[in-house]
Length: 464
Image (cartoon, rainbow, N blue to C red):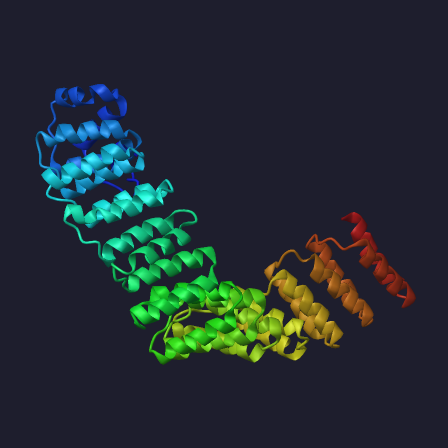
């Protein structure tokens, strides 16, 4: 990728421009002290658009002093845009060149049409990236001297920068406490703080912030981000009951979180096996919040239901999926099958396997082995054989465990002719039988006076 077409530090990919390419080649190659002379000698003039493209490149961010030389040189021919001024200030700040950065801020204010909140957002971010929270706050305090209001928008820019830094939640709370008497916070202020507390898992402090939010800005149905972060903090801290209580309060105010929280809640209750709270969260999400669950959420809840034996509920979720534009897959079907097997529901497992076949969903190798074992335990060898036939027909691998369960089950039922037939299939499939299974087979055939049948199997095993 060419220098002019590379991604800028903010991830935006610029379109290649031959003029920008030429300038970037000089900035990246020529010693800093010779940049302006080389630019003048190249015979190409800048434009405001090209200047922006050059300044937002990685080359300029990696060579800040050369970038400033380019900026000064281009200013002799074009009037820089506000965006270009903000870029050069950002370049200097990211390089921790704070004195030149402030020189640029002052020059922009005098000659560049005035600074903006975006200018100071860049200054805040540069200081906070270095952990210099006090300096970021000091920059906030001088905004008035540049004709900008120290209002909620500016405060939120500062808090966002502080919160992005490691361990920034407490520093952001300190800033909030310091400024809230003079800068009225808005809903976004609290959303920023609550997201920081979510990242640090501080549930108790989050409760305090939500209490203050309710007093200062009230309950706003649009403030979904704040509710998402707060309730996610509670469930991840193991306080599902508390989260449900707060959900009831929010519901009474006409407010609900969004899918971010409900996805976190489902993930948490599934990991903890908390079926009761999982169903409560799901009911509120679907019936009251109007949030449409996604595919992974359905599969997670189905797995939870199957794990605790609530298989009717699992089937209900499976049947509901198409209504919300998602469709059960092999993972869904196998989770339900595994649930039937785990809870010894052999009749239901047999019926569900037939449904899976109709829907062209194959059981996993582990479910095949477990189903064969269950059907023999429940005195249904024909169902066990049907599962094995599925393994053979669809080459479901690894088949070793299914083969072992089949042979040992048939031996227990004295089905020696069937054992011979299935052993031939197993050998043809090159599936290994354990020495234990082979010895058990030999003893059973000898005891039943079926030595001739066993000799056929033994010869084939030897040839293999």
